[in-house]
Length: 165
Image (cartoon, rainbow, N blue to C red):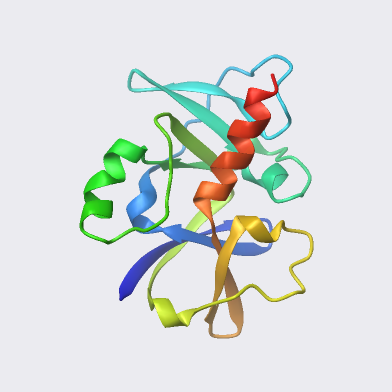
């Protein structure tokens, strides 16, 4: 089965997520910090009347926190309700996005790739700095790799840390 992967850049790393999970890319990042929150929970923002939780993907991936937020973008994910029709059609599997809207801080968007399931390879052992549970696989594109995020695992990490507040 073919699927489209929305790729984006975080530092010098190219990552991707299933495009069906992406609600929008947002540039305005005025948000309110969450007091005493874990470092990967950067804050909350209002997006057309809906509360969005802002997640620092760098911290989730065991990197230093994003410091240049003014030049970042937000990859806004859909909610579980919004992807339910894709699940019914078998277009997404084993994904849980929750009821809340989440925005991931990224440096910039890149391309949209169309790949087969067979083109998604297991993560190589040299990606040691990133928790393997957060990686669904890798895609070879030319001489570069795209790390395919396991969005469910990223959101579980965020929600588990938020539960500790």
